[in-house]
Image 1: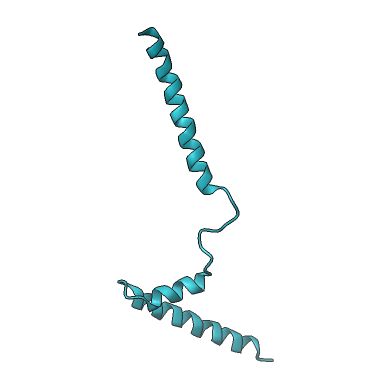
Image 2 (image 1 turned 45 degrees about the vertical axis):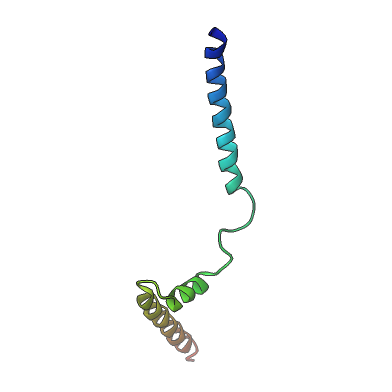
Length: 77
């Protein structure tokens, strides 16, 4: 019985160590979570049928208009 009690903390520590190693493996590596740019993600959301996609589409178009206007203003001599 005494031997069983001594094994319980060792098993708990072993389980915690394995869990920590498993979680750490998900975050290691140089691969980003997504390979899409922010503009590509916004465009994909704007084309989708999810709620709020129309608002994203309008914001995306307004941003493009503002960028175009800024480019034209920057080119004025």
